[in-house]
Image (cartoon, rainbow, N blue to C red; front, side):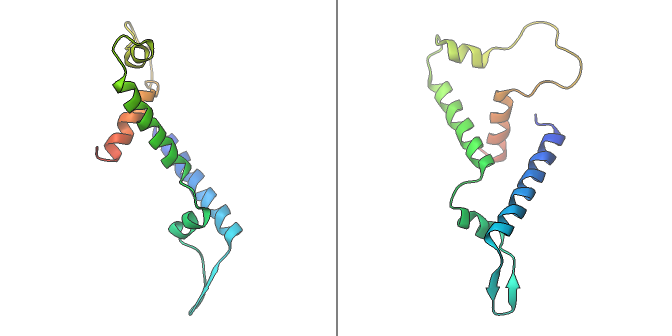
Length: 109
């Protein structure tokens, strides 16, 4: 499904993004003193969805749209096409369909 390196890089990207947001929005003063903002507070401050969550939602939305299409449509044929023949050596290529299935499993749908 997804390569472990891609998952690690995605996680590192989000950690870096949160560090930048913490610098931009600053600390919060409370009774005990100053504290850093939590991830939820950063997301509320930003007032927009996480990029990864947005991509997953769009992918699932397109997948549903494709499934509703008629069987004779070219787009649906291309999306469901499986190549015939010998595959190349090494790790299989990440396909769009595999990413959608991974997202659905992660959401337990």
